[in-house]
Image 1: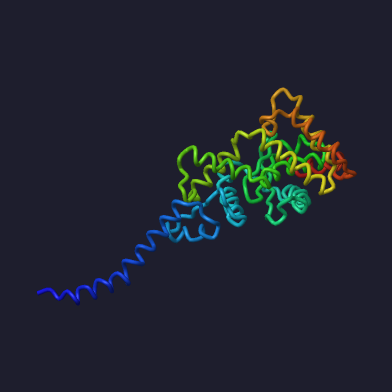
Image 2: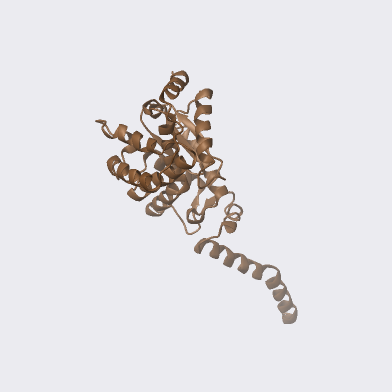
Length: 284
């Protein structure tokens, strides 16, 4: 004969110990996966997914952005050849530090690196990582023109343009979940976009505007951004740095208007002789 009283007592005990906690965990996990996560909730995901880190790009924290940038930098070293010239890297870092102190995101630990490539190009990822080719260093006439390029790329970081494009690419390709994007997928998408991204009109104008503001606050001659674009505009083969939409001519007009509306007395970095001497000494 079944002891129903004992059975019911044991069943209630089992509910309290196992069933209710299990239901609570299931509900919590469902909410994590089906609703936008605040930044604090994201930190729990590595535990729930056995160490797979998840980035919610629509709400990525500054710490996560810097971490993602470091991981992209590791991956990029398989794609590009970073210069080991310590003198050259120190010089570029020096110019970058001056700009970073006057950027709209001065708390980011910016990293400036030189890529050994004759193409006239520069690019940025996320979390403060900026790259400039040796080919562009040779084309620039002075430090202010170099600074204008670095400032433009910093503008992409300040505006989180690559983060936005990564999110769009992840959604379009179907690899993003409601929780976000796992680390390896995020790194792969980010590196591909940084090297080959189709830049939008809005992002380029925004990066120009932000870069010009940073350049001006740092005391560099703002017209250097215009002179650099004008110099490259007439070349038969359009440099990678300007092979974007909108075209260089339109960007020059907008920049010139912005400079006229906010005149500056800054004229630092226009010494062409010193810059060329430095570049010749640094580069083979």
